[in-house]
Image (cartoon, rainbow, N blue to C red; front, side):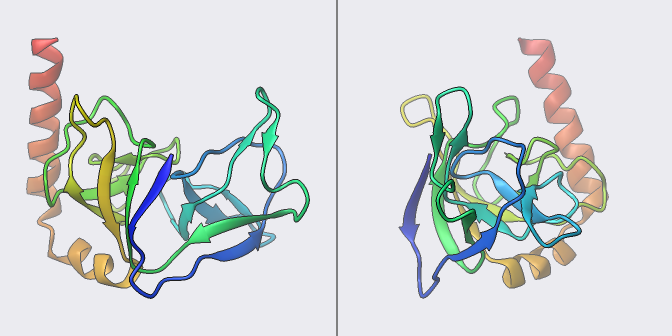
Length: 164
């Protein structure tokens, strides 16, 4: 699910898509070596997917055109495409997980920041509201004391595991 809260002056673009994988709106995209869209593994993110391909349900909004819609400029969105095992707080930086989902814990220490939490998921509203802005967030990424942030996230993850 992907819901636009504020698109500012953003306009999505369509890109050719690689074959052989399923995706949902709100997942993170990357390019392969043929400049086709694939799911991001966390190392690079070009934008947020706004189409669906689900081979089990037989849904594919890209079948006719062979292209996928990507939001890649400043935008505020809500999505259900995030790692459920993580803790989300307002203004936390977001990263891409190896599953092309949003997470507060990067797979590798040098993974880029891809968003900022504006409203964390709640039991009454299990969606994540965030801002995506490629250029602005690169500056945010540089301001993060990455080691302290990652140590804090590890501690929170350990505490959550103990409680559960």
